[in-house]
Picture 1 (tube, rainbow, N blue to C red):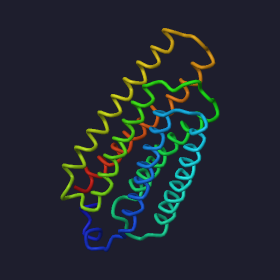
Picture 2 (picture 1 turned 60 degrees about the horizontal axis):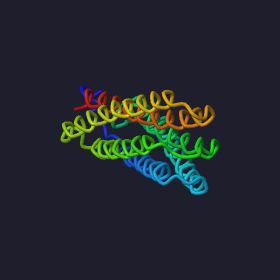
Picture 3 (picture 1 turned 120 degrees about the vertical axis):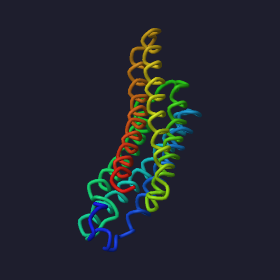
Length: 215
């Protein structure tokens, strides 16, 4: 904890910061890919998008696993081990939900992609930008806590907006039912995108916990 004299005087291993930044970078890449996938939907191209996203998802797994391994062997960490673990884990969750969306698109082969899917994708891109900015500021937390807090507030707003987009989409989907099978496909695809925005807000909650402890 920050009030511990031993903690203040002991050197802290900075290697976690670049690894968390790399994880945030992967999130940014997959957010752009899934948005392009749903915006310009074509089934053959969606297969290629899924392959790219899957490769990045595996990269994210490798980075997060490295973080977990380093936590077990590092004596002094810059923040509580649990907070670093949770942050890496939830960043990986956002990536996983995006990968799940791409996978469902390929598996379900929908006839077309609804416009709200693009809206959710664009919200994910914004969320990834705020997350990336916040993660980069963690190593200078005391100087930049206000900026990080503002980013977290933006992530909260994005999650609320995404909930509204998803709920209105679902209402519209069932108000004008046409093909029951297509309804199921689109609902599952959109749910993955909405889950990704929920996970992005959980990232903000973890970062705010770190701010409370260390700023």
